[in-house]
Length: 525
Image (cartoon, rainbow, N blue to C red; front, side, top):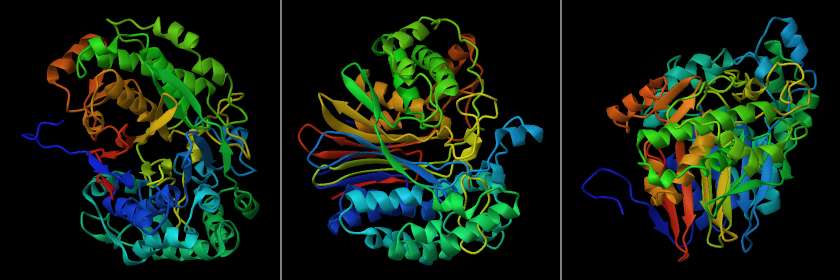
């Protein structure tokens, strides 16, 4: 139990249902759906789509999603891939011929076909209870009437808005200026698109006037996208991957997501006695950083389109982890992992819902970088993701850009299982940080016995791009000790990620927690 002398958050306890996410309006909308008879899938979709209005720099209907879910009355975990393909005419060779070493981040070449809407429609039809029109109603309302800009959103906007181009500036700035705290942001064009989807389903987005609006914006900027590319967008069911960490199973979405990276990282950490180290001391931060370098290096080598990912079993093998752990020197930092194919980013939303029948949904939804590609359609203001920046241009690499191929994704929903029972859907936003974030939350709880909210509140560190980012929650003495071990230590401008989780307690009560690094809350009924 937390010390009530100090600022902090209490966990949210409820019997019938809980939502935890990064914006209060989305959490309330999700709980409202539960109270109206919807289930966890209905509520998660309702909240997720609304997050695209509440946090427009983070996500939107021009993006992708991944989902893990546990159906009511069962303990099996299902995975669903709502990520899109590169347009058929995309070509790494063509970009190399133009002199590019990487996929241009804020250009039409980085735009893959947004597939979240196809996923929402399929999941609603297959698993929802109240229908797509009811699920989309909250987002339609707020897109039309507007939402006040929240503090963390306002913190992120000035940097993210630099990516906006032409129509993007028209739809996402207010009188040409970056929105400030409390200003009302509305997206009437998106409201109209959502009304059409509610009435006519996924074809209202992927064919006809809406698709034509998106294709026109992309081709205006040199894109090779076609109406056929959009019409062919398709999400699909797949099988999750998992690994045991000291009696707790971490279950992740398979490639093209990077969830296997978190499993490998925990397998490496399992070779060390973390519990004997101070939870916020230098020794733990150092071992974690070294494990991350090795796990992320494996990610960069192997994870790609599901049809192209190589040696996944090798990556998940404990024998592999043991060999990698043997490379770690407790007294000296190793060189950074090979650079990743994507640029640094921290822009994603996550929502988790558990309902009265204990259906559990772990749902992550993103446009990749802040404001995605910066390219929005002219009429409806649909902001296009830049997931294609997750491809590499290295010839012959499993993740090399090619037409019709899905890029490696950083977004990963997670679930924990113990003794065969699902105990916690959770996620940690923050781009490349996400596998490290999953490992940190798990080790906080398993090795250090932290309660759920404490496990999310606790200070974080992350090695990235040759720097060891150490949050302000660490002491200066720890930072100095890490520097002595050879790390290039910095204090990041913003906090590392943002987490949401719901624990299904042994007594049957739901315990929700929401990261104070975001504007959000956990809310139950």
